[in-house]
Length: 113
Image (cartoon, rainbow, N blue to C red; front, top):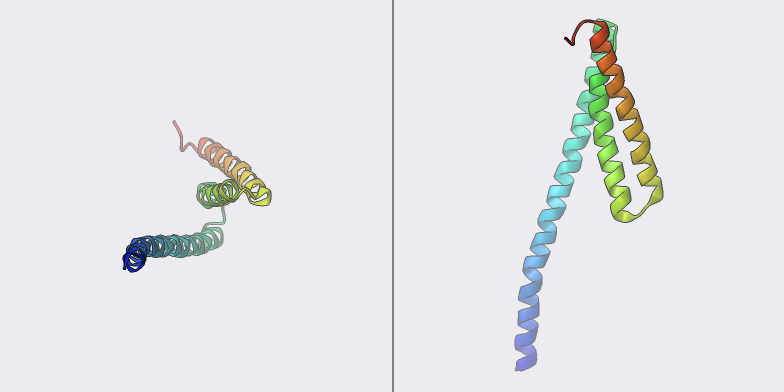
């Protein structure tokens, strides 16, 4: 009888854990889907801006770059995989470059001060 009650306790303890893992998985998939949609939207906006205005907006590149920086770098650190960490660092350098180019573009066109 005691073995049966112990099994019931462990099965009840597992249910909330399984439910929690399921919710985490749903949240993770939602974030991935939202990320993919935002990157596709950014690409469409990049193309429209280049075609219609004939110039590039480095601020939009910086936004996409910052997303890639955080996702690759965080994943690389959490899983201790060097290629992902290095990719995150490369994206980080590109993001800093895009931010500097955006600021210089604004200064050149009188957008700042």
